Length: 288
Image (cartoon, rainbow, N blue to C red; front, side):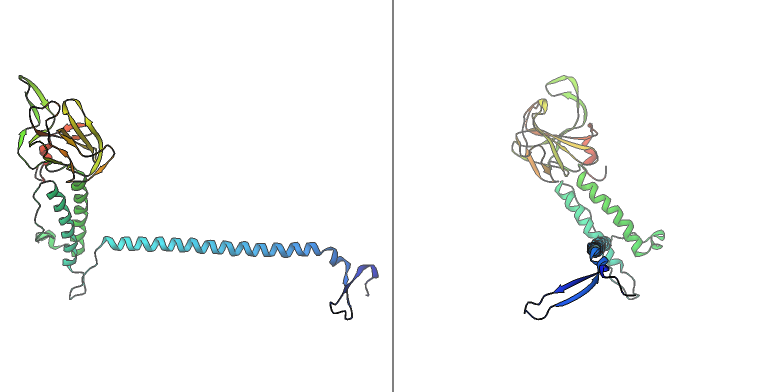
């Protein structure tokens, strides 16, 4: 059936070269729906663009997750030292022992900075008793590694050793008041012999929470450590640190003096746990 004249529109196409014109006959309903067609095409394009953007975003997230997993794997691998295989194709105990000796060396460094004697790293890895013989090389290593990791952190952040490697002149507990011998007083720390200007060292990693004049303590430093420990250094002639400063074991923090309630040059040293003084002698060596 031939369409009616009013249902058909004629489009004239003019040539730029003045050649013969061309005409096209299109149903009128298609022209009136042209904007709908354009809208549909634009909508499809936008939808495709959105899908592409979504896929790209997911790919980026997958790349990030992959990198995180790789980083975790590398970290986990780093927790166990590379094993040296023996003739049977099994990890050599020597490779594990070498990792243990590295931790022991680090602990010895902490101890020596505190004036304490280090310990030997020879024959590490058990005493070869009957129970120890049942453990694999890896089990022996893991047991020692966990213990030594804990020990390294404990030695680093627990006040231990001597702020001065000199003799003690007064101990923790009740004593006669140096200014009134007929009266007893509680001495919350220990005193180290020293000359004015001698170096005073920090006994553990921590942060300075007080540095200044404190009544009977004279020039005084208080350092906050991990596990609710605090150390006090009193009667100083000079303070070399400031409040808020991070300090490390073995660092010089001041000088011996005779300021405050003091009868002569010496270092007053306290260890406090949860704000209460405890006997510092218990922290001078690992054997107490």
